[in-house]
Image (cartoon, rainbow over all chains, first blue to last red; front, side, top):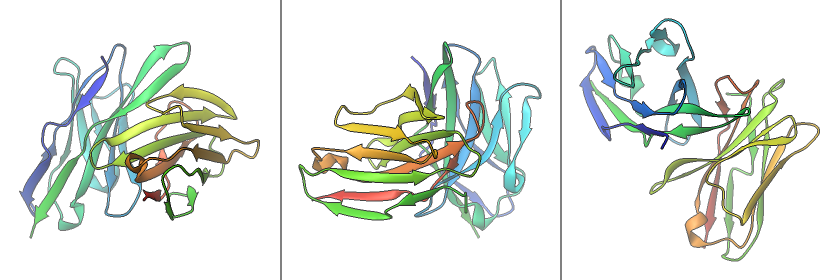
Length: 116
Length: 112
């Protein structure tokens, strides 16, 4: 079955340190992968996506993600965390079923807390 | 501001009632998606419309229905409401099927 896993409910990191938020997926075809961020009382905001091409994808606010097909992972990274990065992060995958039908599956979210 | 608008922001209603949530997509976007976010279920994809036609269905209950109108705005209808339907309902839009989604601010539904 198609799925997305974010194994950590919360990640704590000190300001200025590198951060990683993990995501693994399971889909039947080629995955379309996304990262979104949600600030309190707001809707989700798109950060970056992987469709095809370079395995390292760069996105908004200095975030990047590495697509690893053999490990079926799409971890979100940032070289130097900011306190303002503290938020809820969602990994999502679009799985194609054929005949142009598909659905989006979101992970359960990882709360990132950057400590000053 | 994503450009996606949702009304109302908050809705409080009683069990058994019916409500309608409204979404206006970003200018130029043809796809509209509906999601339900609750503490115990996380973010659940409900349904997607593309240029007026239903395109994909997720975990949408039979008591819920949606449509997309010729001007591309969409409505999500929730009927026979139960306490467990209390949640944040998000609408998102995208240009097409292969693109990132832009989320509205959500409608918080409280069923009492």
